[in-house]
Image (tube, rainbow, N blue to C red; front, side, top):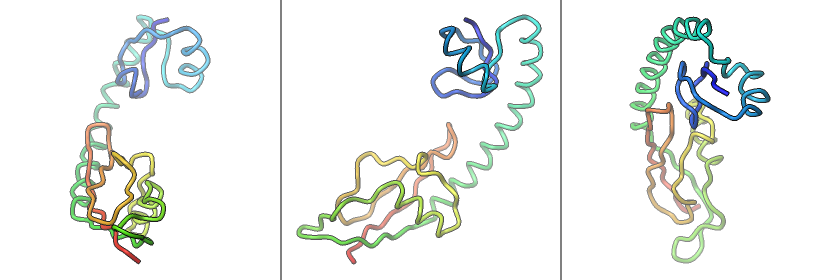
Length: 147
Protein backbone atom coordinates (compact mmCIF):
# COMPACT_ATOMS: atom_id res chain seq x y z
CA UNK A 1 0.00 0.00 0.00
CA UNK A 2 1.32 3.44 -0.87
CA UNK A 3 0.96 6.11 1.80
CA UNK A 4 1.98 9.72 2.36
CA UNK A 5 3.76 10.39 5.65
CA UNK A 6 2.33 13.16 7.83
CA UNK A 7 5.03 12.82 10.48
CA UNK A 8 8.72 12.14 10.23
CA UNK A 9 9.34 8.45 10.87
CA UNK A 10 12.95 7.49 11.48
CA UNK A 11 12.94 4.29 9.43
CA UNK A 12 10.35 5.28 6.80
CA UNK A 13 11.02 8.84 5.70
CA UNK A 14 10.26 12.51 6.09
CA UNK A 15 6.98 14.40 6.07
CA UNK A 16 5.36 14.33 2.62
CA UNK A 17 7.29 11.29 1.37
CA UNK A 18 5.29 8.70 -0.56
CA UNK A 19 6.37 5.28 0.69
CA UNK A 20 5.21 1.75 0.14
CA UNK A 21 4.48 -0.27 3.30
CA UNK A 22 2.69 -3.49 4.12
CA UNK A 23 -1.09 -3.20 4.23
CA UNK A 24 -1.41 -4.29 7.85
CA UNK A 25 1.22 -1.81 9.08
CA UNK A 26 -0.60 1.02 7.32
CA UNK A 27 -4.13 -0.05 8.34
CA UNK A 28 -3.38 -0.96 11.95
CA UNK A 29 -0.74 1.56 12.94
CA UNK A 30 0.11 4.44 10.60
CA UNK A 31 -3.39 5.45 9.47
CA UNK A 32 -5.22 5.24 12.85
CA UNK A 33 -2.45 7.16 14.67
CA UNK A 34 -2.51 9.92 12.05
CA UNK A 35 1.08 9.34 10.95
CA UNK A 36 0.08 8.84 7.30
CA UNK A 37 -2.74 8.98 4.77
CA UNK A 38 -3.40 6.89 1.69
CA UNK A 39 -1.61 8.18 -1.41
CA UNK A 40 -3.94 9.79 -3.96
CA UNK A 41 -3.84 12.89 -6.16
CA UNK A 42 -6.10 14.94 -3.88
CA UNK A 43 -4.21 13.87 -0.76
CA UNK A 44 -0.90 14.79 -2.42
CA UNK A 45 -2.13 18.36 -2.93
CA UNK A 46 -3.28 18.59 0.70
CA UNK A 47 0.02 17.23 1.95
CA UNK A 48 2.07 19.72 -0.08
CA UNK A 49 0.46 22.53 1.92
CA UNK A 50 1.06 20.66 5.18
CA UNK A 51 4.68 20.02 4.20
CA UNK A 52 5.45 23.68 3.61
CA UNK A 53 4.14 24.67 7.03
CA UNK A 54 5.84 21.69 8.65
CA UNK A 55 9.19 22.63 7.11
CA UNK A 56 8.97 26.05 8.74
CA UNK A 57 8.17 24.38 12.05
CA UNK A 58 11.06 21.91 11.64
CA UNK A 59 13.48 24.73 10.91
CA UNK A 60 12.45 26.45 14.13
CA UNK A 61 12.86 23.19 16.06
CA UNK A 62 16.30 22.71 14.54
CA UNK A 63 17.32 26.24 15.52
CA UNK A 64 16.11 25.58 19.07
CA UNK A 65 18.07 22.31 19.09
CA UNK A 66 21.22 24.13 17.95
CA UNK A 67 20.92 26.62 20.81
CA UNK A 68 20.35 23.75 23.28
CA UNK A 69 23.42 22.01 21.85
CA UNK A 70 25.51 25.11 22.58
CA UNK A 71 24.21 25.27 26.16
CA UNK A 72 24.87 21.57 26.74
CA UNK A 73 28.42 21.81 25.39
CA UNK A 74 29.24 24.26 28.21
CA UNK A 75 27.65 21.99 30.85
CA UNK A 76 29.68 19.70 33.08
CA UNK A 77 27.92 17.08 35.22
CA UNK A 78 29.38 15.21 38.19
CA UNK A 79 28.13 11.90 39.54
CA UNK A 80 29.54 10.37 42.73
CA UNK A 81 29.52 6.60 42.93
CA UNK A 82 30.94 3.82 45.05
CA UNK A 83 34.05 2.31 43.52
CA UNK A 84 36.30 -0.60 44.38
CA UNK A 85 39.77 -1.64 43.33
CA UNK A 86 41.29 -0.16 40.17
CA UNK A 87 38.52 2.46 40.05
CA UNK A 88 35.85 -0.05 38.98
CA UNK A 89 32.30 0.91 39.91
CA UNK A 90 29.83 -1.18 41.84
CA UNK A 91 27.22 -1.21 39.10
CA UNK A 92 27.31 1.37 36.32
CA UNK A 93 26.21 4.88 35.42
CA UNK A 94 23.09 4.62 33.25
CA UNK A 95 21.13 6.94 31.01
CA UNK A 96 18.56 7.29 33.80
CA UNK A 97 21.27 8.61 36.13
CA UNK A 98 22.36 11.13 33.52
CA UNK A 99 18.72 12.15 32.95
CA UNK A 100 18.37 12.91 36.68
CA UNK A 101 21.55 15.00 36.65
CA UNK A 102 20.25 16.97 33.67
CA UNK A 103 16.91 17.55 35.43
CA UNK A 104 18.80 19.00 38.42
CA UNK A 105 20.38 21.45 35.97
CA UNK A 106 16.86 22.22 34.64
CA UNK A 107 17.22 20.45 31.28
CA UNK A 108 14.27 18.20 30.50
CA UNK A 109 15.85 15.57 28.24
CA UNK A 110 14.44 12.06 27.95
CA UNK A 111 16.80 9.19 28.74
CA UNK A 112 16.04 7.66 25.33
CA UNK A 113 17.84 10.60 23.72
CA UNK A 114 21.00 10.00 25.76
CA UNK A 115 23.47 7.81 23.86
CA UNK A 116 26.08 5.73 25.67
CA UNK A 117 28.39 3.69 23.44
CA UNK A 118 29.01 1.32 26.34
CA UNK A 119 28.00 1.29 30.03
CA UNK A 120 30.13 3.52 32.24
CA UNK A 121 31.85 1.21 34.73
CA UNK A 122 35.02 3.13 35.64
CA UNK A 123 35.88 6.44 37.22
CA UNK A 124 36.88 9.18 34.82
CA UNK A 125 35.68 11.86 32.46
CA UNK A 126 33.28 10.95 29.64
CA UNK A 127 31.71 12.80 26.73
CA UNK A 128 28.06 11.75 26.62
CA UNK A 129 26.17 12.25 23.36
CA UNK A 130 22.60 13.54 23.43
CA UNK A 131 20.37 13.24 20.35
CA UNK A 132 18.49 16.53 20.60
CA UNK A 133 17.08 16.50 17.07
CA UNK A 134 17.44 14.00 14.21
CA UNK A 135 20.13 16.25 12.70
CA UNK A 136 21.62 17.71 15.91
CA UNK A 137 23.70 15.79 18.44
CA UNK A 138 25.07 17.56 21.51
CA UNK A 139 27.64 16.44 24.05
CA UNK A 140 27.87 16.83 27.81
CA UNK A 141 30.97 16.29 29.87
CA UNK A 142 30.34 13.74 32.65
CA UNK A 143 32.71 13.38 35.59
CA UNK A 144 32.42 10.05 37.41
CA UNK A 145 34.11 10.45 40.82
CA UNK A 146 34.55 8.25 43.88
CA UNK A 147 32.26 8.73 46.88
